[in-house]
Amino acid sequence: MDPKSPAESVAVMTQMILPSDANPLNAAFGGRILEWIDICGGIAAGRHCRHAVVTASMDELHFHASIRVGWVVTLRARVLATFRSSMEVGVRVTAENPLTGETYLTTTALLTFVALKPDGSRAEVPPLKLQTDAERAALQAAHSRRRERLERKAVLVEWQRLLEP
Ligand SMILES: CC(C)(COP(=O)(O)OP(=O)(O)OC[C@H]1O[C@@H](n2cnc3c(N)ncnc32)[C@H](O)[C@@H]1OP(=O)(O)O)[C@@H](O)C(=O)NCCC(=O)NCCS
Image (cartoon, rainbow, N blue to C red; front, side, top):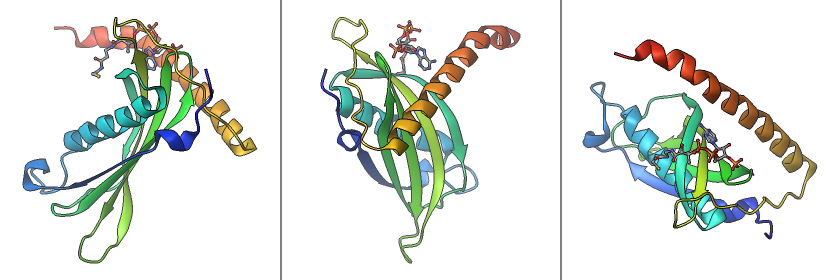
């Protein structure tokens, strides 16, 4: 499979925080931001592999700052690493004060999407085209993160039993 450039997967989404997107503190509801992160990340993953994708996991999710109602939110996602049928996608969310143009970082997240064939079996995804040493180092870091998240998935079985009714 031919490698694809990281730029080919870039997805950008712009939204305005409406009252229906707000929490009781009149700031953006985190669940709505998560929904948009999932959509934007899924578009990036789909652009890379041109298959249907499902979200396998979301981690490294940090809400750095709240967002006011009426402010404009921009999500930017791209594939950071590819494995066999899965892809790690990074999403960065910024907010913009529409009156001043001031922007700031509000949320960051990493998601893993799995590519599926129409029959539901896993589809192999194209590798990323890496051109610089920095890009190759970033891929190595992504491999370490993947190892750690799959290890965490394995121990999940332990603690989730504590929540059984
Ligand atoms: C995600 C899902 C496909 C993984 O299936 P699985 O049988 O546990 O995993 P498989 O052994 O087939 O592995 C498939 C790939 O997913 C990766 N994977 C599985 N669980 C993962 C997790 N929690 N985090 C990151 N990657 C994961 C595997 O490493 C593997 O990657 P690779 O092919 O690149 O090596 C399956 O659990 C699923 O369908 N979950 C529901 C997805 C969903 O409904 N999402 C929300 C709506 S889109």
